[in-house]
Length: 345
Image (tube, rainbow, N blue to C red):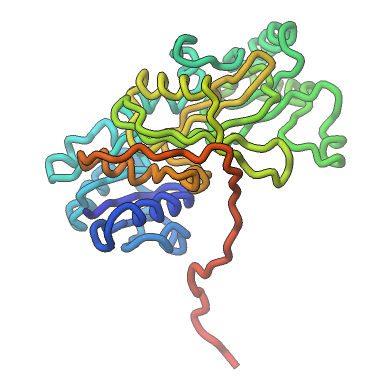
């Protein structure tokens, strides 16, 4: 089977490794495309190709269809423009290509915006932190006033964001120079943030939320159109260098199962949780493999194999998860190319 992964995160290498371990040699061919000629994901692929960097939306969709046709792709596992591609499976099906989308178009668009997602989510499926969505300074002031009565610390995050970009805890005691000198990370002085809003009367939706100060879980999952096939919980240590522990939290297990069913999640995806004063709360559903995917699979579950066998209509044996295992990742130096064009004496 020829499987194509288009432009995506470098962590896809862990998925490649686990896919190779899941089938006899030569049974699958992993094809990777990227806009950068030295993408690290190329190192783990069987075939690598450059894709145009300037194409988006419809033009990129048409390029993807042509690429599938030219390279005899049988399974397309999209990263870039995954939301758009999920809406146009028929383009690929017409040339005999199966597309793996984590959810349908409406669901992927919903997951992309946390304000919309949280508003849509029923508490009977999963509990979220207390939050208010704002898009101007007046609404921000009101949200801070309301939430401060109930919560000791507040934080903010853009409604549309990945990798935690834009997340900040509101610091009501220190200014930015003090934070810099003391090496304080992921915090922003409340008054300085508010002052900055005077230059931006309206802004993209920002979530003002209760700050969850407890441990965080990242759950790597394999599913089949709403059926949770396997999930591995990684509980992150709050101490530097403490690694992560393979956990079995019953509340998290229940929420993951219900979220998978509610949004008919499929393939490989990741769900994150954090504990606050009132229990474990959902942070987000990521419709892609996580950066820690490889660590999860060390627990005894080859999630990529499970997802692939499901796609191919094959059964699998439910793996025994090694709970209590402590895992971590180490960096390995590699050569990704040689840009030396000539040598002069």
